[in-house]
Length: 159
Picture (cartoon, rainbow, N blue to C red):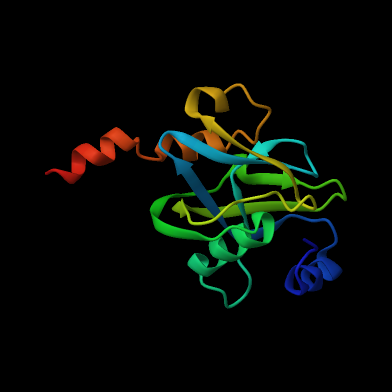
């Protein structure tokens, strides 16, 4: 997906300098397997997500990003956490530098997901232990670690 008009307008003034942007991340899973995407620009695996547009609710942004990148419908069921800092800094191949602050949403997958072959090269389901072995954006380790284990969630429901 090309840059938004909003980011284009800022880039026309600041060039490749660091731009701080709000983002959203979808934590989609089946049991203890997480849906990850391998990104075209880096070749690295990561969770699915992207920038929040001006005036857009973050919850709507996560729905839009997943739909744009995979064609899938999701239902957010909670917030895993909010992440920023050095691990969220990205330099794109064109030299643009971005620092994201992302809200990670636990999501239920409602339809089939397929990579858009524009931003994403492939999708895959991985268990926590498998994720550690992938060439990946390392910030996702924090998000995956914070995602409640299904057995923990089930135990808490009975209280």
